[in-house]
Length: 170
Image (tube, rainbow, N blue to C red; front, side, top):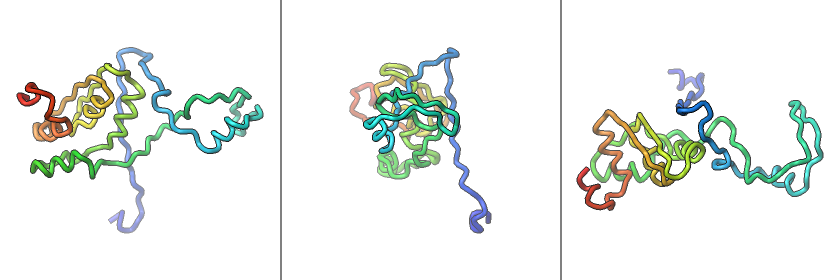
């Protein structure tokens, strides 16, 4: 009844666990920079007079083009993948898709941010295995674990069956 009366907001938070064997894990935000805003591009072209901002942050005259801006703490990418090839293939094979899919942009951001090609990506709660598919597309090795056999079966649809004889035996 709360949403009929329009008295609640949409609470959508996705918890992401970033685990590392070391206190200083590998991370490189240059791999996930956002495009500069038009105002920032203008400042880079014209230059900027050094001054202190109202926040107290001191901006120097050393504005350098770093290839993009660091993203904020919130990743706004939509909340599911309701019209993907995965959904189409599940329907085509008469299989029920995983009910809680997330957009590929979510694992893509963290895989690019935290790994290099040939690194290992681990997803202990794979579901439809979006993370494995993204890791593979980005040329990372991956391990995915899922306890529900029906989700493992549908997750296989994310990968081409043209990988040779070993793929057919799985």
